Length: 417
Image (cartoon, rainbow, N blue to C red; front, side, top):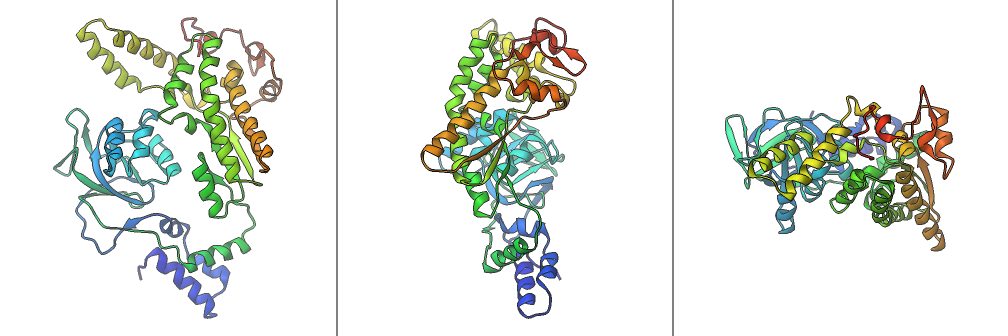
């Protein structure tokens, strides 16, 4: 018979206590997905639901809120105390502040590893992606689905565990973390042979991971720290810099922010290892979407020359210059650190200054640094030599010329970063 996740856990524990099954068998009777459901709010199973459509269940949990199509508006509406569901064709790093402010995220495009899905899971927010039946019109601030039109300001609900999109507000139930839940996980700890580490990018995530028994953090993704709304302009300033001194000036602004992040994470995980990955993704991910930016430029040109037009045209040029056929294999990870060592230098300084600060306070910090996408021993040796001119070193199959523009495609008109 069908039963809730909480019921499955309680039945398994009760059967062990009655001597009908072993603890190992009880563990096998509860699916991991059932435990995950217990950690998030869900829709009241007794509620009558008005289904609108369905997408991919990208991040579990349920949420109800007002439909908002713009991240800036979502942030503002949330500040006024309203609950918001951010609806976008897809999200980019520019939307991070709207995602933070929202109860949940709904997109018409994307898969289980798209930006919205990854960020929402990291935040623990409900998210549905790839809802292809939605026809979103950002200009009119509405979407059509199943012959119905939902406008900005109307209320919808989403179930990130099933992918269901529901019209109107629905009653939600809080997770049930009773004694049976903790008891079952205790049995799992006695049986398991693997260590369990967490992914965490904020001090809050780290504290929650430790609360649930994580024995360390296996990955701190520092790029997520760069995507915060108050930092993204500084990151873009760093990317758009035409000279090293300009780039270092922007990095100097990011240093105290990064140090504060690492301080909080390492303190929350006192005595446990924390693996921190240096900046990994392609730089264009921190810039506006090329298509949307091109539309903005075209509209501004119709109004005539202006300072805003010049700035947008310059930004569009950089976005196009940084575009790559396959960003996953392109100018990112250690390759970025080799050509622009000052970026990794800033991050390393932030990590170890935070560790020293904690040591002085009597807190045992155990940071470990991951240099991403190493594919050759030469790359590792380059990164281990402070002060070396990494712009003139051997890498597999070629020699860096010293001109970063040439290294990314043989054109000298490319920006310095």
